[in-house]
Length: 366
Ligand SMILES: NC(=O)c1ccc[n+]([C@@H]2O[C@H](COP(=O)([O-])OP(=O)(O)OC[C@H]3O[C@@H](n4cnc5c(N)ncnc54)[C@H](O)[C@@H]3O)[C@@H](O)[C@H]2O)c1
Ligand SMILES: [Zn+2]
Image 1 (cartoon, rainbow, N blue to C red):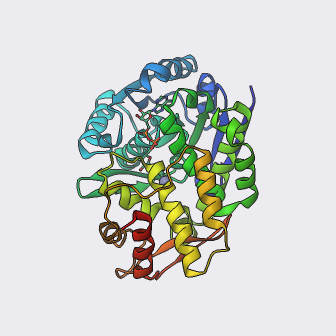
Image 2 (image 1 turned 90 degrees about the horizontal axis):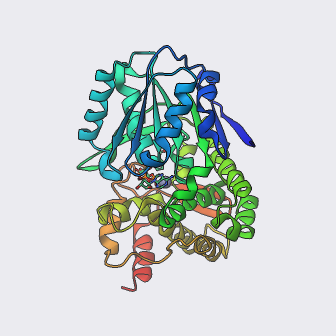
Image 3 (image 1 turned 120 degrees about the horizontal axis):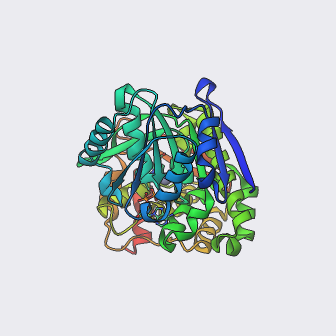
């Protein structure tokens, strides 16, 4: 079985990301190699869509290597990143008798990863954490150590930085993802190209059809390159003092769309897809981007079945208000990551609000 390994370089917190088709079966030996001893119990957190497909194979692989495995299944979707579900997972960890040498495994997408990771970050002041992503989007969320749950007043407001000990990415799991989630995952893959690597973007353009069909070899390559781009930025700036903000291309718009749609009509990937188009348009309008950046960005996103049009019924003024509350905003000024060219972005700390509003109004046809 072919597998690729890359390392997130973070000094003594460095960890491997192992990517390959069928890796779930090798989970036992891979956890041992990562230094997790079978003496202490493991808790696998997963959701109701993932559990029937992948929980048993993962458990069996771990038990065969001598691990005692507990599991906890949460409801699917963003609503599970809540204080109530956090408490339920904590209760399970305590009653199962996890100790300070135990590990929590997140088997699922970004929701399971963010929630289980936050439990791991806080259980007994922090225990080992392993990511076992099953969505394409999770190539992004499983790298970088940001873990969080939501508060009714805002997304990801309660969280920590807690790096995993290992990311075990079985790419075969992606085949059972609904198409809409597949597209959403590609949005983050494309983002990693757009922020850092023009030749990766050309490759994604040339291979769009096969990638969309989940050609196994190409998919592994795409995930690997996406993880590499993220890992290199995270290595340079673990706690988001500067460069890490570049990963937010399209996200200031996107988060506002998600919030105003109450996290339902648009998923994260769809929201940032539209956001990346708007960022390109604003960049061209201000004159910081090369000509053609917007059009190439839009075409690329469309190749992967992603939306690029203004979300119906949203008022640009409301969107602007929410954008100004973004974590990057300082002193109420709008800060945006904008493209200079395909593969090169920059954080602009004080973007002219009126101009952004005008661009959004044009897009909204208002
Ligand atoms: N921590 C970070 O750095 C970071 C980065 C990006 C996104 N996120 C977070 O990630 C979350 C989104 O992640 P996501 O898109 O993976 O969503 P998700 O975890 O909700 O998964 C999407 C849907 O697919 C289902 N599913 C998962 N794997 C499947 C499979 N193999 N086959 C069939 N169905 C499957 C899930 O049950 C769910 O219904 C958001 O909460 C976002 O805030 C975090
Ligand atoms: Zn994102």
